[in-house]
Amino acid sequence: MRKLLHLLLLLLTLGACKVGKPYRGVDVPMPSTYLTFLEGDQIPDTETINTLDLEKVAAINLGWWQFFDDAMLDSLIRIALRQNRNIHIAAERIMQNRYALRFQRAELYPKIGVQGSAERGNFLFNQIGQVNELYIAGTGLNWEIDFWGRLRNLSQSARYDLLASEYGLKSLQLSLITDVASTYFNWLQSLEELEIAQRNFALRDSMHRIIVARFEKGIIQQTDVDQSNILKTIAAGFVPRFERKSVQLENALNFLVGRNPTRLPKTGKLPALNSDLELDPGSPVDLLRNRPDILEAEYQLAAQNEQKGAAKANRLPTIRLNGSFGLITDDFQQWDLSNPLWNLGGQLVGPLLFWGQMQRMVDMAQSREYQQLFAYENKVLNALREMEDVIIEINTLKQEIVAAEARKKSALSAQFLSGERYSQGVTSYLEVLESQRQAFDAELALVQLRQAFLSAHVRYYNVTGGAPPLMKGSSLTTKPN
Image (cartoon, rainbow, N blue to C red):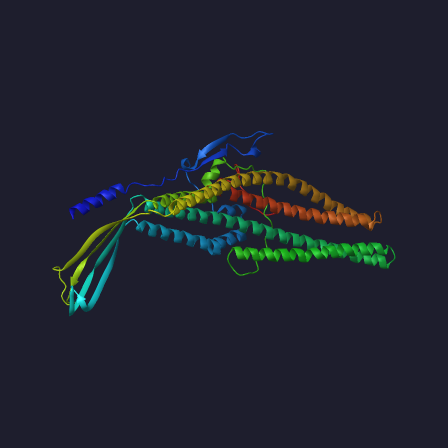
């Protein structure tokens, strides 16, 4: 018995050995700044960063949307974070991985079970012919000594999977907030477009009535009536188009917040945004710290590294201890320690001739690790691309909005003056038609640009990982137009 205990202690000591290598992070070449902030054809310096040297932050500001000071948007996002089914799925995935981690950690410890048996027959106790009874009750022990670290690798892989799922939930929350806000702004845009279309139709219908009346008095020709009617029917076609768009976006919002289609109060307009504020995206390295989707991909890579270590350990022998402890009797009513039953043994089982299958398992695990590495690098490259895109999008949309506001002002003025000139017989109806079309297009274009500007800032929040401040020295304006 003492020799067995010595052997057990020796195995536990040697069990500190581990075949797989620990996760060593990823060396990522990162630019020192973003191209948008450089002049001319300058290229930023590049520094190689190992991800293990970075603190994992992902401190998402889930209340960011409150800067818009829109009660309905605030309500929609809060409901979505509670009721969206994808959020529930991600939360359950965390619980699943938490259970998997506990399960895998339990594999490191001895398993003790209960066993019992009862037998009756004429071939017991090495006797034939006489009917005998035999009863056994006790416990059984089974323990795999994690000599090569296979179980520890699997346990660590489960821990990384849990961390990946937690960052996956944060990434999904970030995307959900972005989707709800962008869809909400699209919906407000469609309502403004519908209002513009209805107002434009009313204007053209009123003008058409005047032209018909003038034609009936013989003042103008039939061509003016036909042209006026064409313009009126075109305007009439825009009304159901924008009505359809608004209802579909309303349905999309209800889906995102996790409820059946319902009508939303149509009281708000697109909020205004101070276009003079400067972006503060921070350093590109901040993306590695803050973006939950990047951190999720890194922990998935770390988990796959541990799976590779477990595959390597599978090529080596497995050491197991097993034993039984209990009582044995031939009389069910008499149980005492005078008839103890025990045994203690060990097994050494390992692959001998598997025709390369165990090595192929290692090769497949290595290939999956490479795939996950490339997926991680893709996440980083895409994050840098998204940041460059959203910065240039916001900066250029500012310029477009300035031009669109001037266009709208001039178009509305031209529409009014053309109507006055036509009423006085100074100009043809063709000029009126063109000025009305220009005014309608200018109003729609400005609404679309304002929505694009708001949605670009929402994407900026998403791209940065929700952690850095949105602007330098200020915030969004809170009052709608």
